[in-house]
Length: 110
Image (cartoon, rainbow, N blue to C red):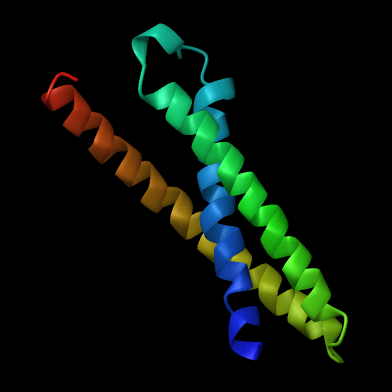
């Protein structure tokens, strides 16, 4: 169980950043038109929703595993720092992947 607990902050970072980017692409980009992006809009809605569900499930498992912990504050601070670093890192990774796939789709004129 200890090995699984070490993965939780990375899962927060991976899926939290994916969800943030997906919802930012759908709801916050002002020049975004659904008709011009027939593949991106449904992908972003589905991927953002699944990322939110995964983050909530991991959060519930993390809370359950935290209840039996003696050094709760230390673990929370460690998880927060790891989550913050992985979140920022994966923002750049997801953005680069988004640009790569976008250019690939434009190149093949899909």
